[in-house]
Amino acid sequence: MRRSCTPLLAVFLLLPCVLFAQRQQDLDSTFVPLIPVSKQTLLSNIDVIANMQMSFQNEFEENTYTRSRFVMNQFRLEIRGKVHEKVFFRFRDRYTRGVVPQSIDNISRSTDLAYLRFDPNDHWKIYFGKLCADWGGFEFDANPIEIYEYTDMIEYADNFLTGAGVGYVLPNKNHEFTIQLLNSRTASFYDLYDTIPGIKEARFPFAAVVNWRGSFFGGKFNTIWSYSLFREAEYEYMNYFALGNQLKLKRLLLEYDFKWSNEQLDRKGIVSSFTDNIGVKTAQNARYTSHWVRADVAVTDKFHIACVGMMDDAYWQPPGQTDRTKLRTAWGYIPSLEVYPFKGLNLKAFGAFIGRNYRYTDYARQTLGMTNTFNYRISVGIISPLLIL
Image 1: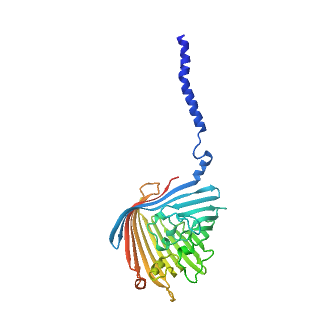
Image 2: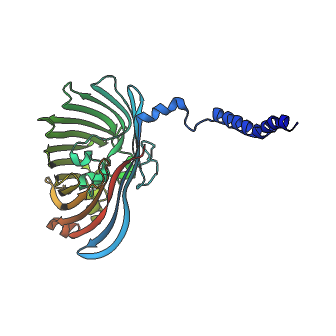
Image 3: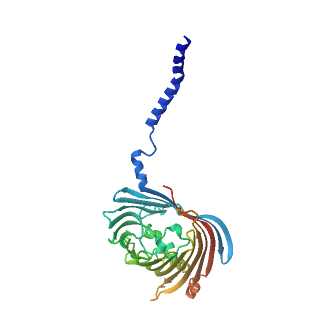
């Protein structure tokens, strides 16, 4: 009798384990992942990038120490990828700028990019959405987190505009031509300009941009040249040229940009900030020129020495005069040391001196009340386009 009970006892002891295992199997079979399996392959075609520049900086004005602080200079979250063999998208939002929707394109000014790109074949590209105006020059073409300080021409420009574009790449892949038709601004005429007698708001304020990217001698010499025509108001235009040139050698990178902007209405607003002192809130017939040069020497794979120099000139044609008068020269100089501590990770630590020197002409000092200024900051921080996904 005792022997016959032993198998039956074993069955009762093992039954809970069998039932638990069956229950666990049922749970596993009904588990639904957060991202369906059918869509997980899409992730292989999508990149999520956190573009960051963070620093601890010490600030000086007229050689007087003013303050120290930790600063998030740049944080732009970017999502880009492919949703079809011939359809691509790109979205980038800037978290260091206000998020107020603009009156012209109805999208936040903090949004840099939000567009679709269609590639009918290997040579043609069609863009539609909020784009980066393809102005040319290597300063403007760089990832913003790589720039410690922009020239006046870029800093005070409206760089991201809504519209459409078409690009064509030559069969040899060495040259690409792009044409864009964009809104000339994100805000309305009266948001930007004061009322001016005789000036009427354009019903279609547009920007037409033509760009050429060239590559020569196996990529050792490259160009990004462009011409842009902006219609700011009825019969009021801005003409803008940018000529970017790059020499790329094994351990040395040299870049030089020349930019020139002739503005019947002061689109940058720099000259207007001077003339406001004499009651002219919106200056007419302003002109800006800019020189920007950058040298980068790779001492080793992990250690770089770089230096940026810039010079911006501002001119104005006062009412009743036939010639433009020079108002200011803004100098900039940025020596830096950059260290790449991790192999295979695009992250660098930097130390940089960012100096700005503003020198006004006798006319600007005596007539507009401007004064020369000098300021600089010493920054230590990190830069990385962190690839999250």
